[in-house]
Length: 130
Image 1 (cartoon, helix red, strand yellow):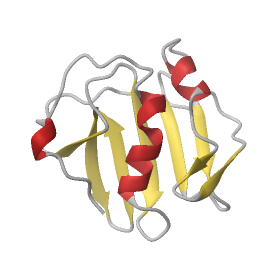
Image 2 (image 1 turned 90 degrees about the vertical axis):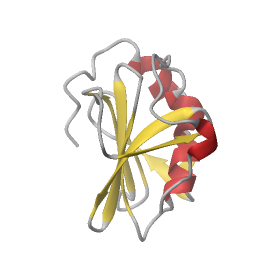
Image 3 (image 1 turned 30 degrees about the horizontal axis):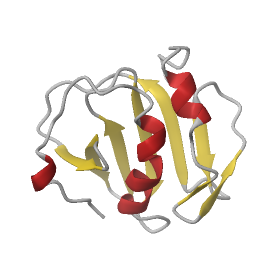
């Protein structure tokens, strides 16, 4: 797994330390790149901290547990990226392996370690995908 361009950002450290041991029923496994995490054998969910922060977008954006996520449907998997947090955190996971709701809920408290600077949706309008 390749580290994100901003993986060395000190703001990634508290988020990475807070990552759950189990996500969507998948156990966390070892990775060999800075600010990365993976769950499942083979990896059902892969995560990188330090990806470019999304700007304004027409992609779907949802809020789960006070964390905003930009959601991209990429055929057989989802790509979700935190919105309004620098550095951003990205997770990619197979649609048939884990639900988007369990991933967003499971990662919420960890990625919330990176302070939110702006929002992309009204909480009342948010619904999980997948």
